[in-house]
Image (cartoon, rainbow, N blue to C red):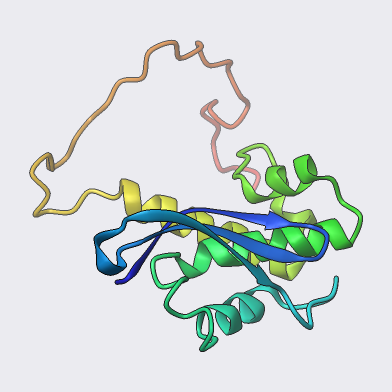
Length: 162
């Protein structure tokens, strides 16, 4: 790889992806900046397709080789949300997982993105049999557990009503 990406960002006017990279050509190791314009992109565009198109574009392929497709997609989401009039804080909050968020209220695209984030988090935390810290039938007692309130479901009842 002749280029190693160090930082990525967005520029809102004109819509562009800003890439800070290190050039490994001729042992110079200089830090450089490349501004990649985002063309044919509107507030209704598909961010996944736009990111994929940019990553495989012949002019930018070498520079974006070390940048993941997911990161490029998130940068395109930030650009699209800015075009739709959302604040940067709103966009960044929508990219994070919130356990209290009601996923039933999301549209299909946002729901798919949240599910993909949850799958990625699950795979990262998953323990497999061949992991060195794997313990079979692990029982954990949680501290600070509040005493449970009695519930009508817990009471023993006969099935006479059926």
